[in-house]
Length: 409
Image (tube, rainbow, N blue to C red; front, side, top):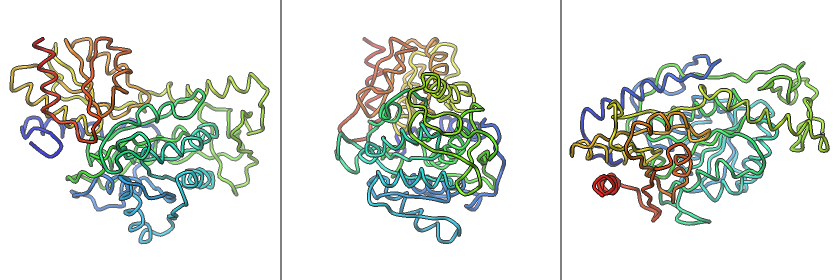
């Protein structure tokens, strides 16, 4: 058994590798290939380091942040790498509020900008994340989750920020949140986060957890990486004559106002206009939900049977332990499969529904008290959860024991 709870079975390992090779091709439209900033081939990295390398490969040229465990290694790695790359700016801000504000400003100056934090810092950032949603500012926020509430356990694993990422900012909108389950995905999904942010002009949250952030394992870097370049057109309205309008940068000659208040297509405040408010909200939602084929990403393991005894739906480190539990279930003659959610928001309801319909039982293992379970139950009402919230990693053994108890009761 590996440190991540994955079974040593070569069959499982081979299937996992095949699925991940498939998912790395991506479906995001409008990307071009650019040379990797990291040597092609195999690398042995920590999840936080892979995340930083993914940001660099995606063209991140501005990072503002404040140190907070278990995300501090992202900032430290950026500090080491930026000077040698040239033309990239790192700044340590006085707190998380200043960090996200600086990132938003840098994005409007034309940068591909990001920050990284953990749960307490994400709480502080949420007002400005709401501002980024209203101003349609592309940026990336990495949240390496830890046990809470409040300061909680600074370096212990948890997955308690799932609902906060989706609903933390007030009002109606769609946001994109993705959750890597390996060091490889920490790299790949950070690249995809930047491309999604630029493609849809939204803040994208990468919901890592301490287990993935501090995990070390092999990953593969390709010679080329996909990159979506920001669409700019200083002659077109930057807030509304297209579903995803072009975004000029300050200093490039466009006449643009940027405000967190309800506004028209050119940024002028329209705070008493019902029509302006309705159009904004409708577009904020539709520009994501109309393109789910580009946003949603899941992968399956051991789901080829026509009917499954049990389907595990998991994400992040919990999915690694779930895959280990499936190895134990299969050894006991139980037809078990895993649906790993890489995209958490928008919730991939179709993928969950399709597999749940041919499964006798649906179990959602996670390191919280059922935040994703509630979403799964919308499309699979009989789903149950397997939770752990004591600051320790959920294990393959406890998931299997829970599943075995359900099947024999």
